[in-house]
Length: 153
Image (cartoon, rainbow, N blue to C red; front, side, top):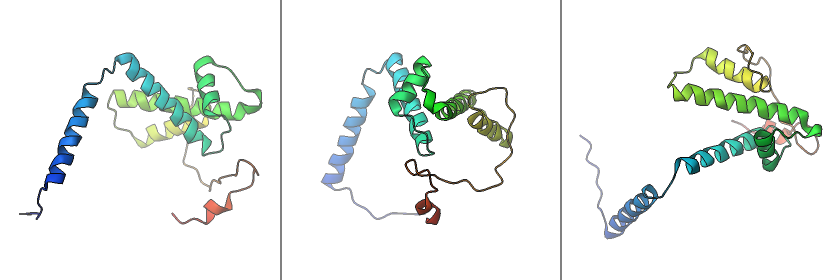
């Protein structure tokens, strides 16, 4: 039987008490369903923006919010809008799967990928796996980002 050797010092005891007090303060915060829904939507919009931004999407966080909330479009950014719609549809499907505690299958994952690639279309079929390498492009120069290609994973 494992018997770790440790001692609880007064400093550790005080830190544990501080953690418990902070936990109680957070649990007692007045988080209403409206506030919780707002926090979830803010997190979803930030996820949409940053996840697509690292792939080269040029819409700002404010533009993503405006596009999703009002349907406003940005004529020079149609490809970026399509990417946002696809990613948003995929997030909605993942949310639906999680709400019914569905165990994901390989076909589900391919369907989610098809939603991302389909630009928001829902009448899509699961996509096969990619058979080639993808590249990361520099937003400014539009050239392949060779720095990241040289990095070892």
